[in-house]
Image 1: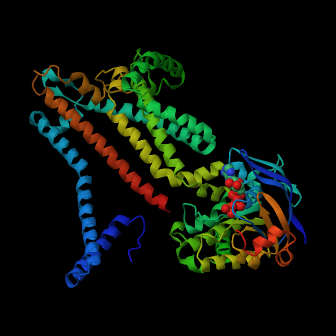
Image 2: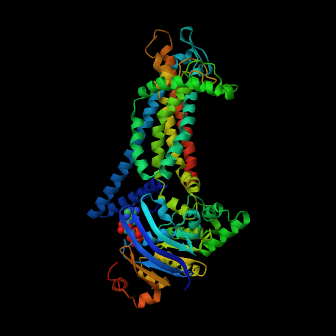
Image 3: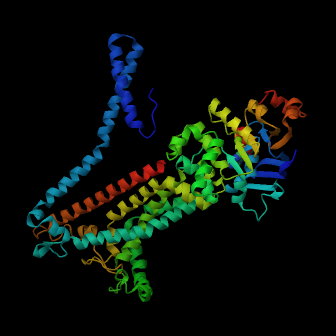
Length: 345
Length: 251
Ligand SMILES: Nc1ncnc2c1ncn2[C@@H]1O[C@H](COP(=O)(O)OP(=O)(O)OP(=O)(O)O)[C@@H](O)[C@H]1O
Ligand SMILES: [Mg+2]
């Protein structure tokens, strides 16, 4: 009587539960049968558990709310001093003069993160596709532990590596591409040092790759072989099978993998801070230095607190970072829902 | 009887397991061949050599020859995709592709560029009719294939397999995951299809084998113990093991 589709399992089973509970309690009132008694108790326990789980599930949301409210209250003094728009669009960061424009930092965060994602996502997708669809089983089992190891390396190590390897390399890359791309503002060389958005992007891309790859591998492996065989048995090539069958089916999971990488990229502070230059300018080129929000907070919190409104402004920066992450995650959730719906077909 | 599939000195090794031992068989054109034998005797392994599905596994080694109309399927210049186009497979469990009912049948034809536009639509209809599914799905061709019942899904897999115009249809216990009525339906389809195709089935159900087989192959521990026209093997098996198996003394 309670047969239901797997997709609506939760909702449906609760409906069944309510119906059953009502019916059972009615029966219980008219009978003393001990068997029925235990059954009604079981159902009531089940209902109780469902309610408690719902409460437990809403706990993280509650935490998030507390954080947002807390940051907001601490930001209040700044907001009384200047408007939200002034803060978001202001390019000047001069605390002693009472100017707290965050635009340079916002652009720093967004450009480093997006560059990292542009570098990492395609490579990670190809890597995991190769490992799952083409490489031998043995190669995959040999490489998986190495990937997990990479994910566990402390970020300061990545930072030092970026400092020693990537930062010196970037001026060379810049010199190499100038003859072709130098006239495009995005690739213009205005900065002789290697401390740049590109360095930050590369270091960040390397840092988020392990998690994107390992989640993508799990996602691809969860696509049943029967599906691949169904396609291959029709004379499809491996690539056709991947393109038409495996990828559509795996798409929601792959998007989720990239989003996980993105979330990590937004929050990563130390390694980026070490290579990105920390100059409060809006970067125009990938070779320009930048100054992400995370670096702003980490570099300044606890110092110069005697300047009025300084801590309030840093709280505002933290709140802004939180809001950016929430917006990106909500956006990703929407994409995910749509991809999910398409994968059902 | 005219031979379509000629198997010579075929051996298959899974790593160290010697799963098929010196198989020699001639399978007739336009008939239903049924392979029977106890579990683990190598029926599925034999079937997979016919569409080169062993190519997909890393540690599996195939030696010997399988000829389809005189062409060795394992010759170096033979494309594996071509082999699988000529030799279709219906799996034990249906796996509809993650697309609509229409697209499932159109998939193979699109890949091999067999038809497009109106012709494609007509062919999808035709093969759904052959698989006995058209009347049930004609109003919802664009809905996801996974919403179909298991029995319907298996008929859909039959339709999409037929749509690439194979010469041989393989079935590895294609009815074993179905309810009796759906199973009977697939059996009837297969009987119809032998007019135009050569069918090779693996079956665990003796009743099914008796009912469908024109040609019967009995396997035991990786070897072919007995093979011949079904009536002959069923009524007068030459081998004691075959007789014991057919009388239901072991499975
Ligand atoms: N991938 C594999 N790796 C190692 N051994 C295998 C593999 N697949 C099958 N075998 C072995 O090869 C032998 C034949 O297996 P096969 O699947 O062909 O049997 P079958 O006759 O189809 O059995 P069933 O009726 O249970 O499906 C068995 O001993 C089995 O254990
Ligand atoms: Mg089998």
